[in-house]
Amino acid sequence: METHEIKQEVKVLSKKTLLKGTTKQIIVNKYWDSHGDEHDWGTDTTKFDSEKEFEIIEEQVEHDFGFNKFTFEHWHIFVDGKRFDKEFELTGYKHLKTKLVLHGCVGAG
Image (tube, rainbow, N blue to C red; front, side):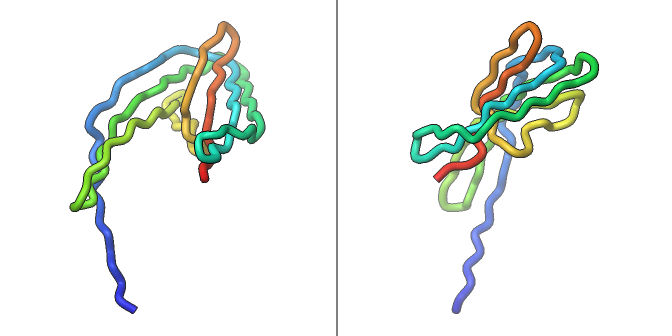
């Protein structure tokens, strides 16, 4: 059987800060995206002993497959400079007085 390799180049086109602040608690409302239909996947709560700095960044990323290019927008959250959204795709957020509430997609299909 013949093997075909598809190469892609990934380029970050732009980055901007959507929200910056501090919080003592982050709540992630997780969901599974079933063809555009959201299914509850539980809630994760992280509490900190002290106020933590966070930043939500928007990236425009281009994927070039050689025969076609696609541009995607990704949001990432960093807490004290470390990436927090490793287990979900950040799709929404709300900063309240005492907490940061995130909406996160854990998978799709």
